[in-house]
Length: 321
Ligand code: ATP
Image (cartoon, rainbow, N blue to C red; front, top):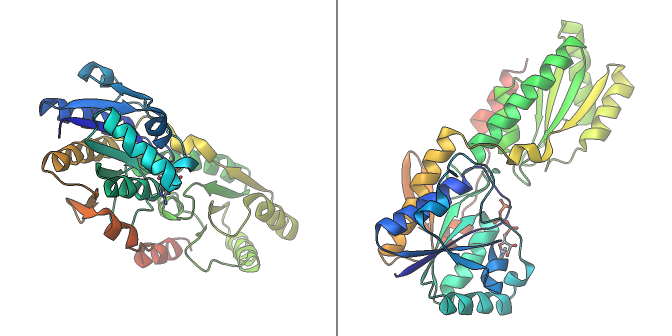
């Protein structure tokens, strides 16, 4: 391997910059040339590719977002686009590529590996929805951001004796919601992976809670669940007479300075990705499982299934009484 390329793809996540920094500095320490590719696979196809030195990644470990920018690239889903990407790698002499992103980005990496470009995936997404790993870069920061925001909503909701429906991110996964459910002490959590309480059951729980003397009710709704937060809040207010507000946390969950946990894993995973390329490996994804850093074949990783922890889900219910 002579030249290593690095790109960020899919949704951004806090810690992506720390990963880029680790890739660049580890590669430089091994005497490799490094190039940064802008806007995910878009920049690969268009040749938006720039050499990176050690200074280019200074003062970024603490910053959210990604200095390389990220994008979704529809053209790259088609074989034509993938071929153009592989050709551009050859034009720039890129013989190793680190792709920081989620499952979709890894599918693209796998295609490039099939076209002769050594590729390594690093899991970067706030959603934690990558089956081969217990941890994805950005999740820790995002869940802390959501938890702190919900604490604030709870203060005002308790003061006014209101009910709050708070919607958190996660796309089709409920990890942020479940973690907030437990760490914010929610009365109910609605997840895409579970058969949740019906509206009637929720409303009954809220009325029973009021009868028990509870001052507030906090319902965490995952963005991928079947309930619409605003409609649900309206319905609760209509039936119970309790003032109810919907708060959709939205993109604030994607930003901010990465936590120590995210910076540490990002630094380790970025560096391991370069080590793997230098060992001649390709079509692998870096993972963290049961306290160890591992790597899996991308195809194998994409076939794995992930499920919500039953123990944590049960706990969210036990602690909400
Ligand atoms: P996140 O879920 O955190 O947003 P992701 O990587 O899963 O991250 P996607 O939008 O699914 O996000 O994928 C990012 C990019 O990866 C796509 O825009 C596309 O360029 C590429 N990609 C996705 N699926 C494929 C595929 N089947 N083949 C080739 N490339 C793909």
